[in-house]
Length: 384
Image (cartoon, rainbow, N blue to C red):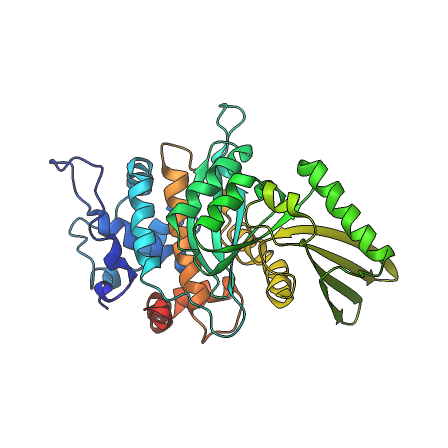
């Protein structure tokens, strides 16, 4: 097994924050490799990573130095509390930039932006606030493109433009929830030659009222003299029946909208009517988008795909990796440990031969060395 043939090569030059004196016993590359391998194989905290390493010491010595054995969990925690997260993130982006994430076919690649609070990183008794991360998720490839830490959730507004500058979004569609409905964010997306589909809610009260009024006017006139497109999708199983109506309306006769919102060409609406166990509910969501009104296929795909970041990233981290239960709070530990969880998640998503869920994949990697190697080189399928 040669880790130089895997994504680990992008982390070989990462600067070690420790002093190289008589107390220096363990190489940074060994600590990172053990952490990622242990996380892929089912370990959710530093103690479990150490147990994984102790149980596989002879195997690990086949490709790692480990002349002083396995580091203690205190050593792991100390290293990740001091490791510069900006440099760690830069190595991560160098790896992602090597991958080919272009989309085949007529539909554009959808990149969803959303924030997640790591609950375990905070402590009310010690007055430590949990860290909040804004992530960029490529829906089709199921891969994290980058993340950025914020101090508070309200700071997503300032963090999103910084994150957009760090990732490649050209010729893609960026989707954001209502928090990102800000003119500076839309301007930033357009400056990177990308499109956007942004949900609107009460935080943009006047805009929401105007959009609702335009659709109400369209309904009363049956959208006469208004450029529009509609698509209806139906989903049905044993207990649930759902109808989703997507609408996209051009703003050719409303120049004041495009003046206020950079690149804005259309407004969208999604009406979802759901019947489950004989109980019917109906929800309506509104969007602003830089897509033309006749590009409704991309609009439908974007509106549908945005919630993939909640299921494939946030839900997986909380349920499969037990992220909210991890209480590492010292220094940069929560941010750095969160990143190698996401490295493991990226690789596990790219491994396609095993069709089971994420937890089953992690257990299989811990039991089967050949399958673990498949996971480690799974990114080769999308390398440029």
